[in-house]
Length: 368
Image 1 (cartoon, rainbow, N blue to C red):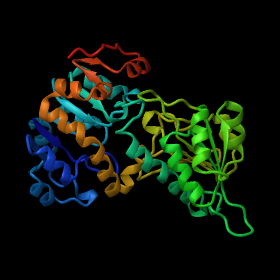
Image 2: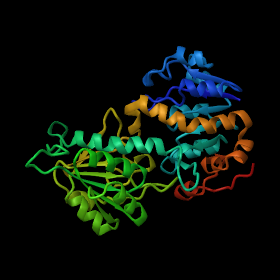
Image 3: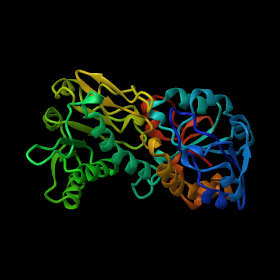
Image 4: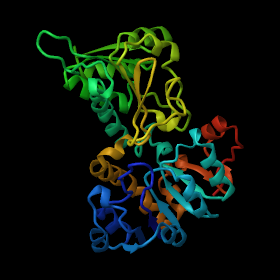
């Protein structure tokens, strides 16, 4: 199979889909084309890729048109839709539940769209996890930054100092992102409250951070009270493949302290607060202010630490890319059935039921 890796074009997206080690694996049985300069933002040169077995092409157009499978990091932007064609395999983050235009473009052009975020193995999301870990860590880092006065925040130090209370950090969701965020917030000395509807998840948080966090069952009353007293709110709620629920209501934000900060890590799935819903920001313009509260809703948070993120993502995704390229999609799905849950569009239809339901589009079960 011919595998193409184009350069990412989303705002300040410096990640790239593959590292040289992955290229050496993929190129044993396949041809690997990489767009010139695709790895520069992650500290990987064209020469590094050549030595690993890839061929460098000058333009994105060449990469897209010559490849059987496009291997990316982020969902295609509208200027890339022109390259869609029947039978093309697109392997990347898709987040279709919040992107109807992309979903329709993939369906209309009969592209086989495989979304990292819906590949499920034993009720886990192995291709989403590494970026969730990074996003959770960075959510606290960015939140601490925007709590400073020059960035429009309250002007408080997250960890406080002797004689002065540390910041009150509220984490909504105790999954991978929430746990990562809690780890950093606790490590920085903040007071941390974690909310979730999963008591087992809250128990695990308590076991990991004994006597360091307060846990609350997630319901509207508890969320309202917790956010009212928060300096930093990190919303991490995720339902695989679906639009994120808006648990942080506008009325709750109105009662928050002036200069407090909300970080919405679920913005890729449409946003998990009333005010960030379908209102993503970018690394170039990362925040907006509503009711005196700073909102951070960057849709590609891990792109800011591209070197770390690229290696973590490539380590996770290469296994399935190689299986598909070496054996074809059908055989790859037989060997790794979890790939099937990643197939969002197939032969002109939506093939992942939660996406079809959220977009009110026709769902058609995959028939290989």
